Image 1: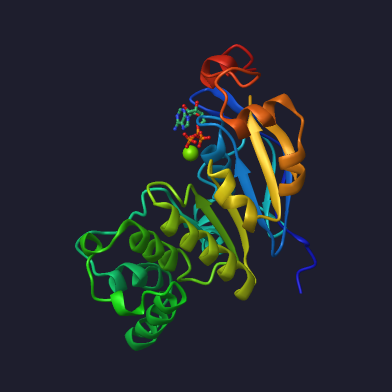
Image 2 (image 1 turned 60 degrees about the vertical axis):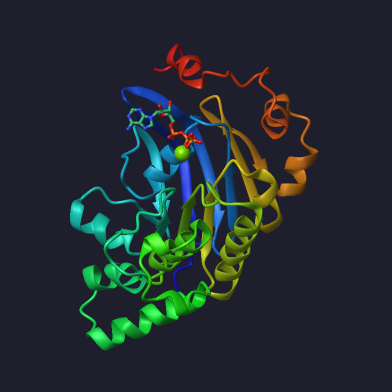
Length: 263
Ligand SMILES: Nc1ncnc2c1ncn2[C@@H]1O[C@H](COP(=O)(O)OP(=O)(O)OP(=O)(O)O)[C@@H](O)[C@H]1O
Ligand SMILES: [Mg+2]
C-alpha cells in the first residue's frame, strides 16, 4: 500500500509561459478520492497548472508530485507516469476517420500488448461506463457534442488511470448535456475510486459535485476551501469572479497585470 494520502501535491510551484510568470507560490493538496474544482477567469493559468501535472510544462520552481512521486522529466519515466493520469481536453481530440470504438481502443493499442479480443472487451466496458455501448460503430461526425465528450471521457479512462483531469469539460454543451457529464464525472470518481481535478469556469454546474474548490487569479491561488465556503466568501476577488463583474481586483487583461510583476 502506498501511504501517500494525496493524489497530487504542489509545493511553492512557480510556472512560466512565454518567459513570464503565470503562477507563483502555488501550494495545493488534492486528497485521494476527492473531486477538486479549479476555477478562475480566462487566462489566469488554469490550463497551465494542468500542464505542470502532466509534465508537459516543467515548473520554474517548487515541487509537483503525483501519487507521492515528483513528476519525472526524463521522457520514458514521464510516459510511464502519464498512464496513471487520464486527461480530457477541451477539444475532445477524437480522430474523425476512426469509429467510436477505434478511438477508445487507441490508448490500449499504444500502451499495452493485450490481444485484440481483450481490447475489444475493454473498449465495450469503457463505452458502457459512459452509456454509449450502442454507439461503438458510429463515427465522430455522427455524434452530438455531449456524446462526443463522453467518448473522449471513455478514451481518457481506457488505461484505468487513478487520476483524471478535465480541462473545461462543459464547453459547448447545453445545460442537459452538461448535467450528464458532471454526474458522470462524479459517478466514475466514486465507483472507480478515482481522484478528479476539474478545471472550469462553470461554477454553478461544478460546485454540486466538488469536494474542494480552488480559485486562481492574479497569478496565484486566491481561494481554497469547500464549495460552501466559496459561496460564503466575502473576498472581493472571489466575489468578482463568482458574480462575473468586469470591475474589481481581477484585472480584465490579466496578462498585462502580470507582466509588470514577473520576476
Ligand atoms: N504556450 C504558451 N506560450 C506562451 N504563453 C502562454 C502559453 N500558454 C499559455 N500562455 C499564457 O499563459 C497565461 C495563462 O494561460 P492558460 O491557458 O493557462 O489560462 P486559462 O486559465 O486556462 O484560460 P482559459 O480559461 O481561457 O482556458 C495566458 O496569459 C496565456 O497567454
Ligand atoms: Mg484553459
